[in-house]
Amino acid sequence: MSFSVGIVGLPNAGKSTLFKALTKKSVDIASYPFTTISPNIGKIAVPDQRLYKIAKLINPSKITPATIEFVDIAGLVKGAHKGEGLGNQFLAQIRECQIILEVVRDFQNNKVEHTEKNVDPQRDIEIIKTELILKDLETTEKILEKLEKKIKAQEKEALVKEEILNKIKTGLSQGKSILELNLTSKEKELIKEFQFLSAKPIIYLFNTDGETKVSPEKMKINLKLEEEISELSQQEAEEIGINSSLDYLIKACYNTGNLITFFTIAGGKEVRAWSLKKDSEITEAAQKVHSDFKEKFIKAEVIPHNKLIELGSWARAKENGEIKIVGKDYKVQDGDVIEFKI
Ligand SMILES: Nc1nc2c(ncn2[C@@H]2O[C@H](COP(=O)(O)OP(=O)(O)OP(=O)(O)O)[C@@H](O)[C@H]2O)c(=O)[nH]1
Ligand SMILES: [Mg+2]
Image (cartoon, rainbow, N blue to C red; front, top):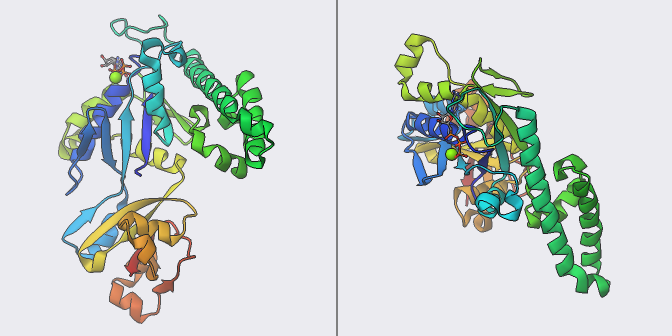
């Protein structure tokens, strides 16, 4: 399953403007054909200089970056959880995504209508939050209803779920998102199957008409400007001395999703970056590379990318005993270069 980011927000916040800028940008990435999966889903290359540094050593015929998917979801309005403005359909799209990128309107323009009449970022954030919470509340009640028989029969698993669902229900009723309930990792694991909306990590992107300012705490980007930058070639952008902030944004999504990157070199034929959930075992990585590698996995050769670059070649790294042979229980580290042996 590929990692996907749902672009969410009120109508006219700038979601499609962002989507367009992101997708145009990725066309520029060397040897990577941009894929539009459907009009509103785009697969985008994750910027990573390490990939090109490794490729410089290996000199492969193909270089392939890791990708993440962005989904341009139509605007949510008040009452979406009750189906307002095709709300349920949009909420179902959010459910499929791993993280939410919320575009918040922070630009003035009388020609672009605001469903709430005036620009007020904090109020808009509350509107979306409330819709997600109300939908989750509805979902929680439905699940509890379904579990009723099993709870009455004192089935252990059902009782455990009932307890956590009741805790969630109380929190949601108080206007708290599931994310704000600080659940333990065990509790998170137990409710994973329900794909709650307000449990998803969220990044707020303020679409400003002022200056772009990005930091881990606040993402303030002029999307109109980004759209214009995305129309420029790399050379034109350099001449004007203008920088896009989208690389930063893509990386922020990647980090918020708790992803790390490992690299494969396919015996020198192709250098490729892959995304992987942090703390995954190497068999998970193997499965990404090939669906039957997980079963066939025996061992792998691993070296941190910086060590490989320092030594200058795979053969040299081998001579120096820097390439580790690892088994099934090895936990992949960010930046590992891996050759699977099956
Ligand atoms: N002035 C200004 N206009 C913007 C900015 N960002 C987007 N717009 C304009 O606002 C309008 C709506 O932008 P979209 O990107 O289509 O908004 P959206 O969030 O996709 O809207 P829906 O799909 O209807 O929910 C377009 O005419 C954009 O050109 C901005 O930063 N400044
Ligand atoms: Mg749109």
